[in-house]
Amino acid sequence: MNRIFHHRISWAAYAAIVVLALCALFFLWHRERPASIVVGLLLAMNTVMLVERMLHTSYTFENSLLRISRGRFARERVIDIDHIKEATIVRKPLGVQRYVLLRLKDGREIGLQPADEQAFISEINKRQNA
Image: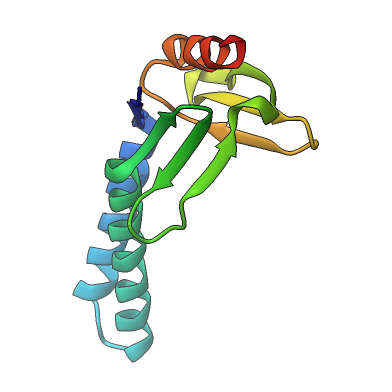
């Protein structure tokens, strides 16, 4: 049975979107130099990619696999749940960021931000024990 977790958007991510959009608007508004137009367009593209990534990121459990889809512009990652050594919740100072850190058996680490961290970790544990 498949289970899907969606990405949790933090207030810092909302702030980043607003700042990038305002900077893009500023550079496109003051276009006396051609470099301002280029910088404005690059900032607008980054804003669009950031919004798309936040809205379309999902984590799907399929049998013994975890599929991490980070939107239309990024490649999908597939992780075998049996290769996960540990899953812990990490909190950054001042409540700026909170995420689930997956430590894999080959030494790699992956940070994910599901909407419900406890349910996500319990789903990993449930599928590892099954």
